[in-house]
Length: 107
Image 1: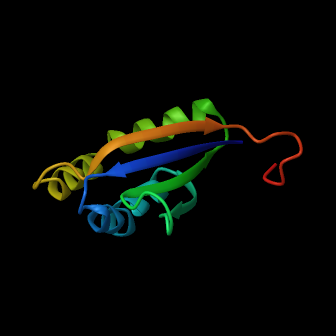
Image 2: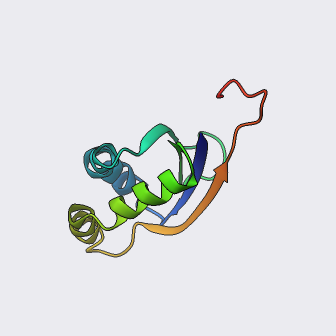
């Protein structure tokens, strides 16, 4: 199992729009493409314009297959364009692929 940590640096004033898009659009498409979500977080103390989330995949090949299918899904392309009519919602994405250690309770 591998985990992907993604940090979205959101355009100022657009965090609610990003949260709405995940809640109402993206999560359904993740489910359709078998992308397992571990969780979503915002910060109570720290940077206020970030959304952090983690996904889980069986392997790197599994990740590539599922992300590829999601990113090329016509519904995602359409919904993303519609939600970004007034400009981009996310200024920058940072992602890290993590593999649990042998002593991790997430094994």
